[in-house]
Length: 120
Image (cartoon, rainbow, N blue to C red; front, side, top):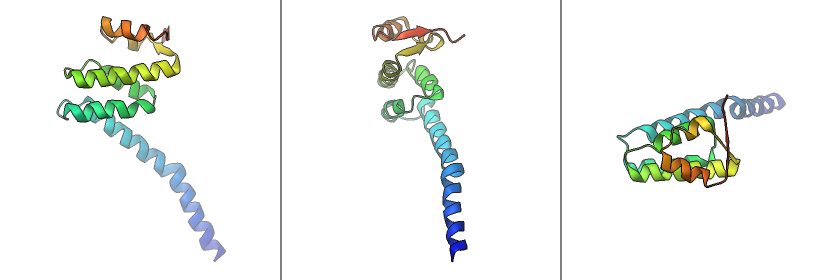
């Protein structure tokens, strides 16, 4: 009986340590692909742009910067709002990402009072 218990507990730890992080990263990658896909309805992409703001990782921020240039104003506004929330929370924005935005959007980000840093 104790050996079975140890095997069961070991399997649960292995699942939590190795399997779940892989599934989370695949799920995140799929969601970011949907955000960048113009065939996905604009309302859904706007919801995605708002939802991924909590993740604050580099791939998320890069995808949101690209989405801020979207042809659909709803998606672009949601992406920019999410970027502003991330950068305001962090207090810093990478200059390389800021320069990818339009001049008007750059001014909007600078108005947040965040520090602009060079990535090099």
